[in-house]
Length: 325
Ligand code: NDP
Image 1 (cartoon, rainbow, N blue to C red):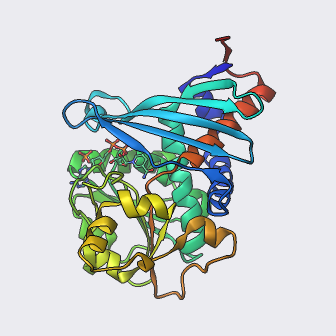
Image 2 (cartoon, rainbow, N blue to C red):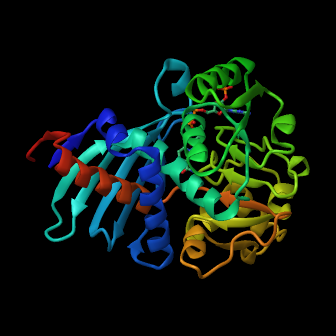
């Protein structure tokens, strides 16, 4: 058994590597080579929650569980909104082989999944990135989008001017080639962008379909429980919608659940899982004018595949602390 810290996970799983590991996991998931029970959540006082995400993969052969606290107020106190631990088991004897920080693992794998979807669905020449939300996910999504598309312009909108400006400053210093603007106007930020990432903790829609230009690709990431949604009905209706995993999308993606219940869309409005596109069983965007939308909820195989990669890389590099149970 080894223990991997936040720093270990960040060193062992750079964004470019995370993208390839998550692509493999999403493709395997859509081929049915995984066990993926629905994530369960528990109230943990006030707006706080705890998520429990088990799963199993055939290749790499392992299973595991992520236990993660979702504390939306954490950013103000300088903590990550996601705190937790991932426990990884090998599949020959079922032994626990690693425990690692679930916070960076979640942030890295979520942004990597958006990059996998964006690489599969967005126009190749996408250069203008709109980031709605300016927290931990925004920082990782910036890295991930720059890794897969020739981004030259970044627009940031957040709830507060200060938070958007801080993020803009961070982006300018990390990526000096970018033209960066910031503010609180989501409409101005999103209209005309090639890629829009919504990475907020907003409980009600902050993005309207009427604001989205033709040809845009959207990564809708921030709302992971059925009572929350970041986008309005119009956004869903105008878009070709892709999921990470249909089963959870129909139960946990707020706007999709609401619209199916209201009869506004049928389940067939979800064109495909991203893994189906990667496996060649489904097409991506139909043409340059289409609006594509990746609805991210996050799936356990993304965590498990990334955890296995970290464990494997730790064996080779000597990182981590041995801790017999
Ligand atoms: P942070 O707390 O670090 O950041 C949240 C951001 O959302 C802040 O910039 C905040 O703005 C912004 N925000 C909140 N409300 C609004 C609003 N009404 N309008 C515009 N911006 C708003 O959280 P994270 O970055 O860690 O996570 C973001 C979201 O992503 C969370 O809801 C989280 O649960 C979800 N998530 C989803 C995952 C998935 O797999 N799909 C995985 C991990 C997280 P400000 O700073 O100005 O107040």
